Length: 434
Ligand code: AMP
Image (cartoon, rainbow, N blue to C red; front, top):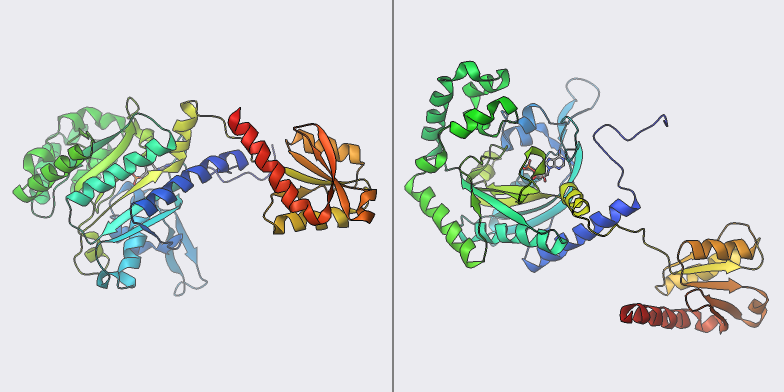
């Protein structure tokens, strides 16, 4: 085994994997434009406090999974940073920092990039993974809640993943949740002896977290625990009903689950997760999101509502390959520039550079080897055309060998780019007709 390996829980996206991700990122980008979200980038790391306050100190993401980074020499200089475990807190920090509340609301932002969680690695759970994220800050809903859920479902559909459904819940707000949380605490207290240690600790600090415990010993208790559905205040109940009504008009039928609380503290009211029907296990959520009406204020801004989602691109790629999606192929270079004189790499490189300047995807064969070997390599990698630089160069000409048609002809160097464009277009046309 090679001495150096990608760190545990991370992986290299080799060209074939990267091609799948690029396709997904392209769909994300085009959908974000279509739905009016503007791209934003935030740093891959933030002050840890942004996540501790934003995501919540008593959550798995912060307590167990935050990827902390220490930088600076002395204790005084040493800053407490953390790699971002999710994008919302950083985006909301940016919204506050740049005074975006003065812009027309809601501010619709999108980001696609890597997230980091120091979790135990397993299938579908990595320490570095990618999310397509959208956030709409400054709209209390309920219409926009439905708009965002529908956008998430459209992403899976356009990616070619069938049978994705949304599980939906409302987890109430500051008016009704505290009473429910107390009710929940009392209920679990009565069953304290059956709780695993971590859950027992959390009962004191954050009882809601018990509902999304990953501990298998909790499953039975969670199924029997009181649900928020019976405790929503009138405003939250009205909001939730309106979200469902809007979804219905958009043709979306959510599956209601009153136990869906999501792993992060900042959610209020609408929460949702995306799953493939029949694959609702722990590591199988394809995305999730919800409303966070208290987060902007928590991070130092004026009280401002918001809602968003994060879609896990790694899991979508896994689901696509499990569903038998076409195997990705490494992109091939259609044109190779070869030469009769093995030593003359200058001419081959110069011609490839001219073709690239004209917008043609081309590779020069820069190995010092015989023409026959250069042609074999071009054929092996699936090139369509080989430009051969030989004696004709003296007359300002090259040979163009068409590997698909099995033909070869002389072309004026001055016309080369145009001729190649024309031939490649014919190949594409031929492939299209086939
Ligand atoms: P969360 O906010 O934790 O629900 O994450 C949103 C989505 O990101 C999940 O539904 C997953 O698709 C994906 N995700 C979260 N954590 C991981 C991880 N450790 N590895 C891969 N994907 C993840």
